[in-house]
Image 1 (tube, rainbow, N blue to C red):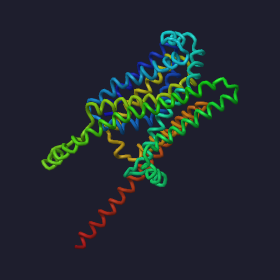
Image 2 (cartoon, rainbow, N blue to C red):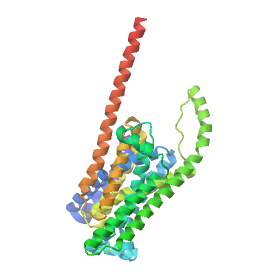
Image 3 (cartoon, one colour):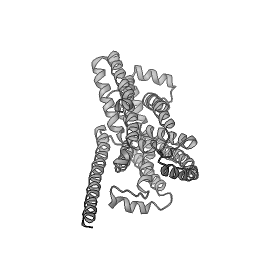
Length: 380
């Protein structure tokens, strides 16, 4: 099972490391390995959230996610995206940006750094909306009940997530403008760019999430009709699989997953520049890491890990909230990539530990209940 799920990741790792040695020797091998580990640690929460969405899809769309999706993730976000943001921000052609990336790495890194505020605003707002919509929803299973119960009550207010996100964006852009003005106004003109980029992130979330939700809702009637057939099949002793999203609903859910992955990739791409400004090594390292995130996503779905460890999804969404806040803060302040990665890993680790404790407690209660029944039956 492990080899089947992670086979492609192992193969890509081997090829990537060999390519690194051929390209830049053993020093390049070390850099690619570090970049791969960094990408996996930063994106583990991505895999958990992806798994929660992917398990709703049928086998065909899960395969599309692993094939077409990985091409978008590796080549689109880890290779093309750094070039595109430089081309757009520096107002140059993509070919010229590639030449700059290969021939003048210091200038290329500077251009990416200059483009960071708009990238952080877009990604931060998209991830913030995911987090807000999660914590304001009333769920049967609550991890941090003392916090989630009152937030679920607040969530009954219409458009609360959007209002809070817009307030956060306004504060971020105004703070950025004030900070730039105090430091000579060199980036004062970018305050407007931050605002527009943040709005673009918000609108992207609403469009993609809204369309996927719309088509998902349209399937409810069909699911209700099929429910009766499932009940029949159960009575007859036939195996029944859960209804999976297909068609337009799965397509828009796939788009949502890709945009989500793109937003998660921002911190990895930007963080990679702290390790190397060589675009080839960056693409190799981040590409290998992206493969493992994809494989881990499928593993979580196939093993039913999210069903066994019910708080994992909560931990991942809290990690998303932390990452959104970090991205917005990095518009004007620098935060070490180790801190960014560690927060996500710690939150998910804590949620996993909480899930294990919950499972043990339930097992103990079930065992105690069985003993009581046995005593009653023996007494009778």
